[in-house]
Image (cartoon, rainbow, N blue to C red):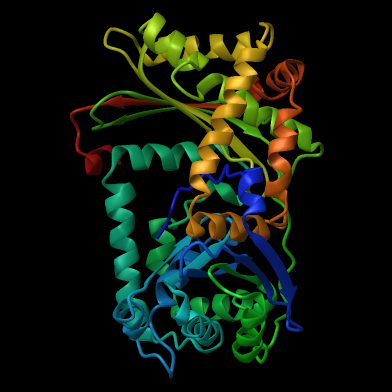
Length: 443
């Protein structure tokens, strides 16, 4: 299942003091990160594979997500359907998710079930059966998921079209769930090859967070994972968009309830930026625009001028390759999509010339810190952060440096960032206009 999670997560210094994080790597290349959190007798075990839709080839979109579904279809030791049934029987929970950049599997139990969690994950890393009948059945499930979330959803269609045009030259333009035509033509042999190619210990990170002992974890990991052979991995690269692609605009007439505006700017992330300071400045910039009720977009365009009824912005600094800074909005009654775009551009252009006060910067920084203190009060979210950063090649210690790096960003840094990145040549706009047609007719 696809989770559209934007992981802008930080660790507070107080949290860092309350936990101990250790790492080690097996001879076969499996990276293991263990964070001991002894507040309650619970443990989360996650396996992250460095494979997602941004690695996929034309004609094979959706194969990473399809394989995620098949990972629950059994091994000789654990037949199809038994994995999740066993987890639930023992009081645990399990699931998985696929994104552009990685695929992750998790189990949560009381800490005495840790040996079972590790054994189950090692078993399906090495021994997945991938039967033809199971594949055909699960592929129908995936296709129905696509129909429900995208094909029969005006907002889903709009977001997919927007992404495909905004990310013009990189694989991130493709939907994680895949294009329907590719799903129609997908074969079990392709899936078997994808599994054999990418699901190896030297392409994975095992993350364990909770009430555990690192030495015990080492013993268990060595017992169950050490014998799995590594694989020769295909060469991968960091996707980069063309510089200043040129302004792009799309108009869609779909049976949406209200008109919607989508705006996006091609920007770097921590994995693609030539200067990381650009990325930290963009994160603070998005906060000045839309971090809380007193941020500029909401205070000026919703409350003061009444041009918009809703506005949201996003920027994921943790991604494989170049990304997008996005703003979505719903015009207020009596205002058009074009007026909404002009008003938002006015605020973006103001960042290039207006003074950003110290109070604004302090508010943004405090909001980010507070939000992430609450977020990190969970072993699941801690594991998510570790796995995501390791899968992107940034390393889990990156989180320890973020608060310091964000605090160094000045008003001048934000102004220069706006001048460099928030320009028409980097911009894509999509106007979604409601119509009385059905979704099928609109397509």
